[in-house]
Image (cartoon, rainbow, N blue to C red):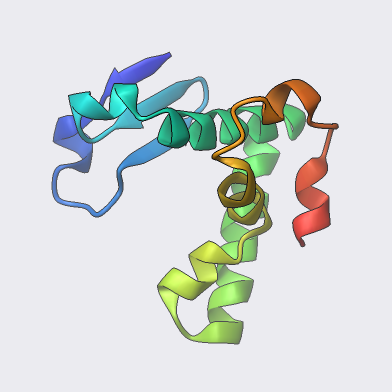
Length: 108
């Protein structure tokens, strides 16, 4: 379910965020952004595969490990396996129909 999260995201650089089962968007106009929506739907699939709570624990753990490695928050974020998979495939709107389970592991 896509929700306009304008209030929650207004003071951030975040265009969208997935908090299972919701996709929160900063701008109403982003509902039409197929690439952003596809990116966030990839995260929904990842979250379901890892039973949601395990996803968040893994995501945060990987972020902090990457942060210690790169000493740069943006670089740490971009190198999280879940984000690498989502960014690599966000333009392929057929990706989720062909994606195999736990595909994010290839991006570790």
